[in-house]
Amino acid sequence: MEKPVRQPREHWADINTRVSALNGRYKHHAAITVMEKALDDDDTGDVAMVSSFGAESVVLLHMVSLIAPATPVLFIDTHMLFQETLDYQTEVAEKLGLTEVRKITADPKALAFEDPDNTLHQFNTDACCTLRKTAPLENALRDFDAWITGRKRYQSDTRATIDFFEVETPERIKINPLAHWAREDLQEYMIENRLPRHPLVAKGYPSIGCAPCTSPVKPGEDPRAGRWRGQEKTECGIHFIGGKAVRVGPDGQPIDPQDGAADTTKPDTNRTLKGEKVA
Ligand code: SF4
Image (cartoon, rainbow, N blue to C red):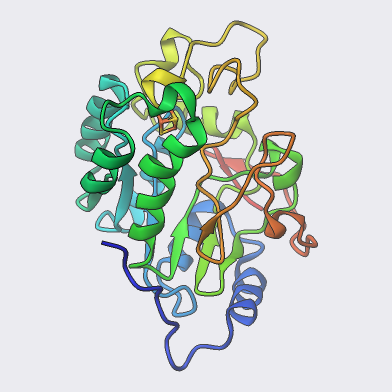
């Protein structure tokens, strides 16, 4: 059942003011400190993390386990995932002591109606992602005022100026603790903290989604080349504006007004400590 849109707390300033204040307060902090502050700051409200338990997810999961292991972690089980991902999710949650991993699944009635034989992905991947990922996640996020994502500036031009805190919808804030991290920082963090890797990474899958839509990547290919191979689609559509999924543009990136926001948070140092980049 679709949940009502969450209402802001009575004493809160408007969301743009709160996000601006959050970015001002924490712009010089390191990723793990940003997460720690975000989980404790009245301006963020109730916060969840969203994780695919994919190739690099363990970095944020490890950070949250150090700060507040009972933080709700929303994991979307599309019923199309690799068995390795399901096993890895269990392994990581146990190893890190995450006590509040919540499996998010599609509405059974909607599934039975729209994809009764599990073949929707073969002829309409956008509709399948909306049914199995975007709609269930949007519904689950209505229990929260903010959510933590793994988005990073290096990933695309449209993410090149993202801040630690963004207005996602009029009611919800997106938190990007790793905004200033590079791919190498993630690798370094995983190695130095001896974190378990998704077993498919070693088999040529640097980016891991649903089994029917993910293939191995050859040396020299873009890490996401194995996602929806042969299609223009490159994003699953888990980006919301005004409570609705955002369409992707011709470059395959989400058309997200927040991504084009002016950058007011310049990194002041590039120091790394145990893989932790100080922004
Ligand atoms: S990635 Fe493929 S199988 Fe998974 S929800 Fe999207 S279209 Fe469906």
